[in-house]
Amino acid sequence: MRVSLDLSIPLATGGSQACVPNLPPEMILKVYDRRFAYSLRRQYMLDPATYASKATYRRYLRSDRVHDLESLCKTVSKDYYSYKECQPEFLEHIIMFKMEPYFEDERAAYERLAHLQGIDIPIFYGTTQFLDGLSVDDLDPPIPGVLLEVVPGIALDSLDVNSVDLDSVVRNAIRIVDT
Image (cartoon, one colour):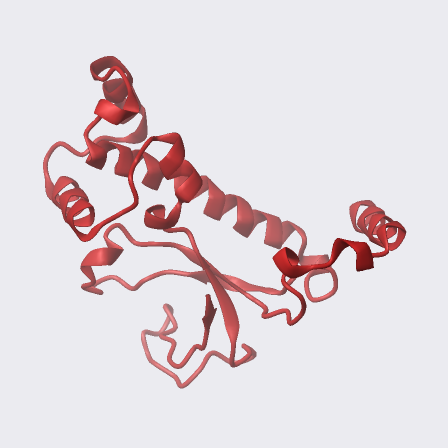
C-alpha cells in the first residue's frame, strides 16, 4: 500500500508537526493484518474475514475467555477434531499471534541489513503503531506495520524472465551475501 504521511505525533513530546523530518512524501506501508493473512487462513481452514466474523472476534476479545497462545492451542487441539469444527474466533486469535513473528522478523532483518538499505534493498523508515485511544473497531487488536522506501520499477509478476541476465543476478546475490 502506497501512503503519504500528512501528520505525525512524536511519542516523546506528544506535540504534532506537519511531517516527520527526513521522510519522503511517499512510502510503502506494509501491514501485518490477520484479516489478510491468506496463507495462514487457509492453513487454519478459516474463511475470509467478513463484517460478522470481525464483530464476533471483537466480542471474543472483550470477553473473559481470551486465551494466551499456548492455552489456546491446547484448547483447540484437545476439544476439536479439526480446525473446521473449531470456533472461528479461536482461530482468528491464533492467526493474530502467528502474525507477530512475521512483523518482528522483518523489522529485525531491516535493522540487521541497514548497510544495504537504499542500495540493494529498500530503505526502512520505521514501524507504525496506532496511538492509544484511537477508537477504530476494525483495529482491535492494533495492527503493526513497517514503512519502506518506494522503489519504482517493474513488478516481479510482470517481469519477462527471458530478458534477465541470470549471471548478473547471481553475481549480485553473491555480492550481497558476502557483505
